[in-house]
Amino acid sequence: MERDDAERERQRAEVRELCARLDLTPTELARKAGVVPSTLNRFLNKNVTHMLSARTLARLRNVAGGINHPGIRQFIDGEAKPLQKQVGDRFGPEDLPVLGYGQGGADGFFFDNGIAQTYIARPAELLRVASAYAIFMHGHSMDPRFHEGEVLYVNPIRPPKSGDYVVIEFKDGRGLVKRLVRRTARAIIVEQYNPKKTFEIAPDEVKAIHLIVSSSIG
Image (cartoon, rainbow, N blue to C red; front, side):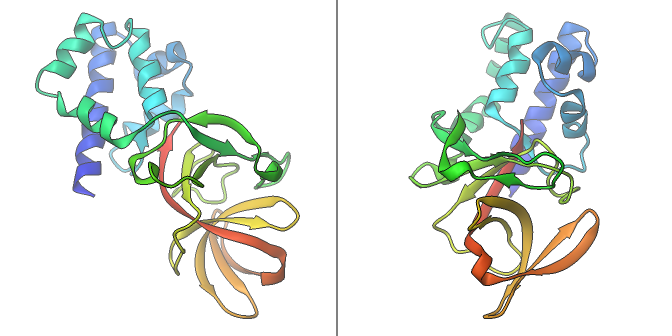
């Protein structure tokens, strides 16, 4: 946890450094990088707990000419050098499949029989989990814990317990992101935050419940 906090602060410091060197506001930097402005502005708010993905950080750096731009190189090679090391430690190759696609008009998604929609950088905690995958958060039912468009990293072999955040895969191909309250022989009780409510799911409708181990923006 302390390491994540330190990495998050170093990422914020680099984003602010980029803005200062390029004379851009965070909104302007985000637009030039092809990142949703609210994503970057929300990240700079100290109340959030997620970090920028390696891909988003690379897009922001590319606005200034990439990592070899003298300003960025000076920042990374100077006092904030641990940022580059920890980003490298946190993310591996871009071989993690992103599963599912949005379901129009509903707060959920479809798994599409496990077909990968794209591939992204693999976080360190999933480097040796062959069956790991990621999804993009759809809808606002888990705000403020998970925001729409946020990347959720999933470990399907680590059993979830009460209180964990999970991806629920239904037998009909639907998927939902919720907080697991408890499981009984007669019902799976889950919670969402927006609007806040707890509800039951019939076990015979569910194909799998997988643990969300971490998340990042973009």
